Length: 306
Image (cartoon, rainbow, N blue to C red; front, side, top):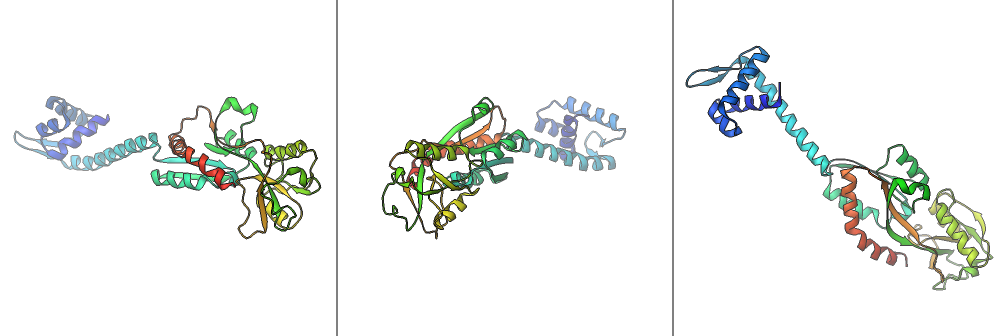
């Protein structure tokens, strides 16, 4: 029994006329007649009562029609679902992100994506780069907003830089340098430092240390919290100064100041990364929106970091 058997039967049952079914299906009438006969032989019952002038459904034909209509409806729904999935209109998209670095851009991207693809299930999770790669390895992630790929990962992932960020100094509001427009890093040589822990962001930590070395001193790192919000709390509490990415924000009410440095750090790149060769229409649709917004992001984020 083939799908065409169902379609031919449904047309004859609808119009109760072989000629009309032939016209609607664009199939020769003898082919339709033979298909109905084959179907009746396979099922073992008569589906139609035929005379020279009329065609009527039998009781078996009426019951069969109910099931056939349901099958054809499900087939059409399956076809539409497959087509929509191929266009990225339905499905699942799993995104891992570094919260502070994506805060200036992710809400806008998600809002635009949801507006265009409201039936895609979005799964968003804040995770550091190590957790992102563990999720990729487990097949639990489609896209990540992260830092530059480690060398050993580059053959297996696509990578696209979204914007570059730079380190800023964060000081208590009553700090002796709080009124300066830009901070000379060497003036902080005698200060205790509060740095986001290296395990969570080794590139960020290492760049902060390297900048201090280039300024002629080794920083006295007293605290290494595992949350950037904690970094700001400890700085506000007077337990040290910090170097953080320009995109990072504390709480609005916090009594801290953030200042650019007189010498720019190496760029801290926010990248979109995804497995090389991954076939995912939902991912492709999101990347298309990201590419549409990329120029605006690169113009806006530096201004937000001032």
